Length: 193
Image 1 (cartoon, rainbow, N blue to C red):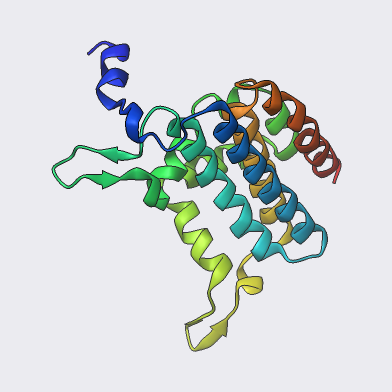
Image 2: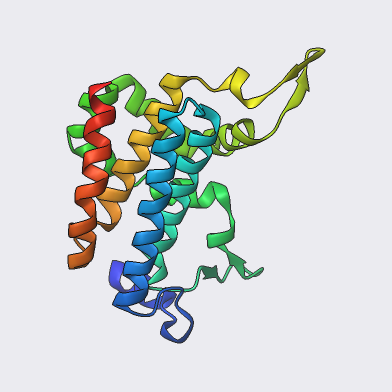
């Protein structure tokens, strides 16, 4: 099937999640605030909360990236809304273009980058998201999020989220290129750690 015909079938301009440049910029501002919050949490050694926010950023990027084209509803017989499905949003955020640049690979290494991409595509982010939020009993012991999520994981996930944002949304509007200076500064600080 022709790519443009496939996209055209999904368009529903009356109900798109994002319906203007101003709304797109508003979504970007929201995402950048989440990235800033994730960085502050990381800097304050709240690694599990930073991971949760970083994974949420990936979800929001997927929504903003596609929200200008449709409302998230797919016709699969059930009218499923992909913008409400964590796993689908993780897959959509980890586009094949994310690892194409060298910046993220230099910051976290090739092995860690492959791990992040695999986690996004194979429910690993869903499991990590749950581990970042909830305590539970495992093998007779109470486990809290800080028992499972360390500084290295939080750093990798935050850098990944920053790159996902940059890859999918920066360059679409003038505002996205201006606010990218803020996210680039965060990326550069983290990359040096």
